[in-house]
Length: 197
Image 1: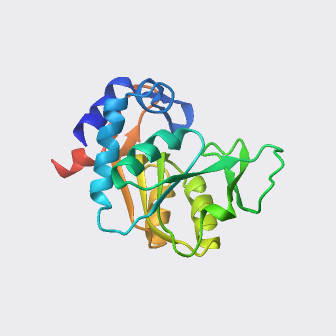
Image 2: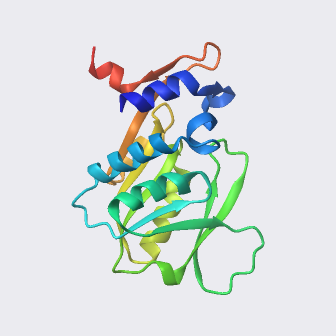
């Protein structure tokens, strides 16, 4: 998606450690017109997969998941970060490390919201090391639901998450794949640029 790549290049900020901030349009301030485009494109890519639920994690994934789910006409279930909140219902849980490795969160989904009849599309805004996606996958599979695919807005190909998940056999669709991001110069290069050379 050229429009998304242009926004990342013009408004994204490359921070130390390969962190890519897209706060101006995706996960702090949200450009809802762009969000609608992203939702429509992920819906198109997974059309015919029989998806009846979209799963994500709070908080940055929720907006994208809602845009996709609106197009698919299915509900969104989001994993909550468990911060000493007493749960009144049984939950599926996973511990996930942040992409920087500096923090860990326990995430949870109420068991009543996922089951063997569910065909799930897992959606998130950014894929780096893939720890969050692996946690979501483990909860979906614990529910004996089927992971039909993983839909990502921005994949950082210079980190291992995408290749690891593809090697595990999951269908992974990323709308923009960042091949490199130079914190010194701020330059961002995309996989699509290789395809046009």
